[in-house]
Amino acid sequence: MARKSAKKLDAGQRKKWLKTLEPNDAKTELGKRVFIDTNVWYSALLYGGVPEQVVRVCKQNYQITSSQYLINELLGLLKDVGAPYKWRNNLEKVLKQVTLSIEPPDLTGISRGPNDDPILSAAISSNCSFLITNDKDLLELGGTQKLLIIKPAGFLLQDARIRN
Image 1 (spheres, rainbow, N blue to C red):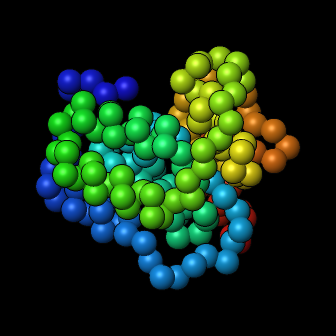
Image 2: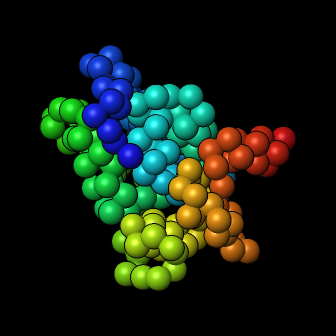
């Protein structure tokens, strides 16, 4: 995912993200949980656009769940594009404050890619309504009765329907 040509996070972007993700006192009334895949977090942090909109909507209206696996994977990708250690450390702390961390059972063989199993397992274990991803292997699964595996743009459409 992270290539040498990947965009670098400048100091302004890093500061903006820590402020954006800062825990707020307002608790959402909605009980729905979402799991944002690593690739969506990465795209949101580096490029903005629809992935950034997804993170903002989820933070405001849903309980975001995560896992240590996801956080480690994200921090590793950010290290690869030169994000400073201190900022990555702060990002990890903030993510742990604003997300519900789930350590799922170690399920293997539930998806085509072994790196996808911990993500899917965490989304299922935390009773999420949505797993938001751009991963083709996960998207092919489509989801279950309780978990919809969906692209970021599709999630924004679903969210607009839910809230209207």
